Length: 168
Image 1 (tube, one colour):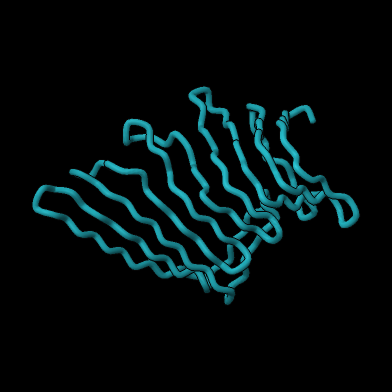
Image 2 (cartoon, rainbow, N blue to C red):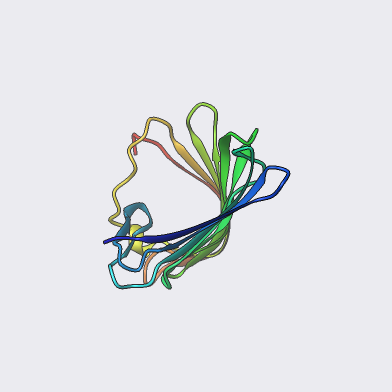
């Protein structure tokens, strides 16, 4: 299906443009298999992206928010020298039972580092999720008040690091 967008740009006399993009994705299908989540057409899906530009160049970190009822993401994109992405910062991510904040750092060698602080992480939906094919390994570091492994097993007050490499 189609997504509707409403874009508002306001430019001041000094050349600074404030922009907001509102997106209604109610009629679209969205699939994020690595998060074990999808949205079917007809279910709500609203997004807002805000940015500030000077002469067409970002002068502040763009912010975003997406809410579909079962998936909520709010945060900003940390820019490096205002022309490339340094990190994706999640002030809040809620997917099913999972509730966390975090940061995905983009390394110069093409790799990523993920830092999280979680109230809850529910791993049950990801047991059969295909892994992302990539050349570099992924490192996830952080803390969680509760990690739900199965319906019967959960961990409390977890802290540590998880690494996934192509070899397993």
